[in-house]
Structures are given as C-alpha cells and as structure tokens.
Amino acid sequence: MRILFVHEVNYLNKVIFEMHEFPELLALRGHEVAFFHYPEAPDRPRVSLRSKRTRISGRVHPDAEIELITPPTFGGSRVERYFAPLLASRALRREIRSRGYDVIVLYSVPTTGWQTVAFAKSAGVPVVFRALDVSHKIRRSFVAPLVRVAEKYIYRNATLLSANNPAMAEYCVRLSGRVGPTVVNVPPVDFLHFEEKVEADLHGELGLPSSAKVVLYMGTFFPFSGLDVVVAGMVEEFKRYADLRLVLVGGGALDKTLRDLVAQLGVSDRVIFTGVVPYSKLPQYLKLADVAINPFRPELLTHVALPHKVLQYMAAGVPTVSTSLRGLRGVLGEGSGVTWVDGPEGVASAASALARKDPSELAAISRAQLDRVRARFSKETAVAAFEEALTVVRRQQTHD
Image (cartoon, rainbow, N blue to C red; front, side, top):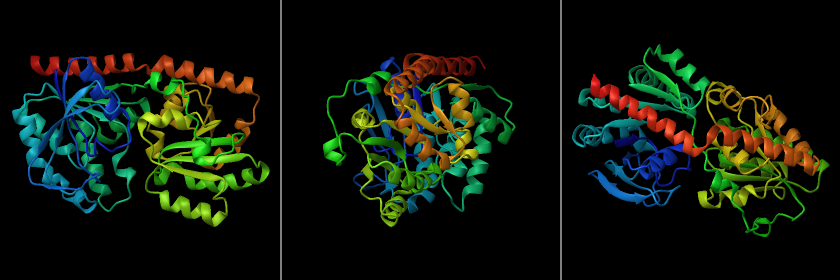
C-alpha cells in the first residue's frame, strides 16, 4: 500500500513514540510510506515557500526508509502555528490529490487534521484517524474551542477511528456522535530496545552516588504531568532518606517552573535534570532507576490517554508508580505489577517506599510488569493488527 501519515509536530525532533514506530514498521513490511509533518521548532530554522521532500532513515528503526514532506514554512516559530493551517493547506491538498495514496493515517487535529479529512473525501482516499489524546486540552489557548470543533468534525467524518485504548474510543464517540466504525489498536513497544543489556553506567556523569535510590520520570514536562506536586512531595522523603534522588529525564513547558521550584525548596543537590535524551540512550537512563513514575493529574485529558512512558518503564523492568488513569489501567488490567495511586500527591511517598522493598519483591514486580506488557504490546502483534485495519479500510473504499 501507499500510505500517507499526517501530523502537526516535527518528525525529526519530536520525542519518539508511535507516530514514528508505526510508519517505520509498516515501511519495513514493504509498504511505501510518506509522512507529512509540521516543522515546529526546527534545529535549523529556515524559510521555504515550497514543499520539500526528503528520503530519511527511520528514527526508531534505521533500516526503514520513509519520505518526509515539509510544507512551506517561515521558520517554524510558535506564532507561525496560528498561520500553519493556511500555509500547509495548498501543499496538503496537492499531496492527497496527486500522489495516489491508498490510505491516510491522520494524527493531526487543528493544524492539518480537518483539512486532511475534507481533501481526502473529495479525492476518494480513506482516512484512519489515530486517536491518542484530547487535542483541545493539551495546551491552554484561546483557540481551544475551535480545536474542539475540529475534533468533533474529524471524529465524526474519518473513515475509521482507531484509538489506542477503550477510554479514548469512548470519548471520541461521545463527543462527536460518531456512528462509523471504531476500533482499538494498542501501540507497539520495542522490547528489544528497552530490555537490552546496558553496560554504560551514568552515575558518575550525573553526579549520583553509586548507592543512591533513584526515582525517575521520563518524558515531556506537560502542565498536567504533576511533576511540580512530586517535587514538593519529595522534600519530606529527602529529609527521611539521605540516599534518595529524583532524576527528571526530558523537558517541556514546566521545565523552568520545576527548576525554579527545586531551587526555592533548597533541593538542587537531590533533583537532577538531564534534559532531553536521545531515544537510543533511554535504556541507560532507565537502568539508573529503582522506581519510575507517571504522576499525571487525573483529568479528562489523562484519563483517556495511554502514557507510552509507562509501557517503556515496564519493558525495561523498572517497578512503576502511576496515577490510576482509566485508559492506562483499562488496557493493562489488574495484576500488571504497577503500583497505583489516586493522584500526584501520593506518588512521592509511594515511590520512596517502593524503592526500599526487598530485592526479591522488586524482582517479582518487574517480572509481572514485563509479562503483562509483553502479552499485550508486542510490536509484531500491534503493527500486524494496525496493518490489517488499514487493509480493510482500503478494501472497503475500493468496493464502494
């Protein structure tokens, strides 16, 4: 099949998740894959009044090759985001109408999502909308009501809606009144990458005592991440345990707030910021952790999401503490080995206590987590199921 993926983030510098994995895995299975992205915050800002096509190697799977399509841009600044729907539309319409795609996989909502659905409908190309989150809740913005309208339009009119968990599917149907086909396709997890034996030891590089008990967060510092609550909660744990450290791997909107808070609370020697880390090195950082955390605030946005970081923690064998979220808990089920808490306020104490359990008990927790994620998120099974969904949509469109 000729498959076009469309998203409104930068393929080249966005933190790696399924928007990279599915296209690259499908390319490795022999499909011709293109990706239309939005060049937000590029490493090297540049002005271009024409679309640019580049053959690139995969970021997760270097043996995969996809065609990356970059629409016209004035440098990818934050302000440009508001004009992007107009800047990208002409190039997107031409791409859909002239390239003979069999199916489009859509991740985008406000920037290029609603246009994709409209252009594809007129061109007779089926669209599979891949629902991962609540777009109008991700960023606080005066355009949030318009984003919600775009969500409803896309959810209702996509040929197929593919959600990453049942709670997400229910949200999309409830918001839009969708009557078309809706399925749940879980994301792939690269077990080989996160289970790999890691020789490098980063304790010295990060200034961590070799005997430190490490609580680790990995991912984007979203406003809803609950990290500010965790940092505040860790102060009491730091007083109780001299060997306890908090390592924050990543960056994002809360970065400065968190750094200021750490300084204000006088715990700069106990909290380590690594910055954004290349995907290839994530296993080295996860090896540091005695416990990994997902302290998301329990709200609509997080309840229907499926935080990929938790699956990666589990695949790496790191005992995990997470806020109890409907989507995540619904997919993992009971007996997953994850320690659930009601909200970010309970994460610090739960993680500190978990880090001090008997090694044999921690090993049993790691095995339970790994068994669960292996059983439900095999990349071979996940990509085969998603490929089948695309094939069925294409076949039905052809018959219609």
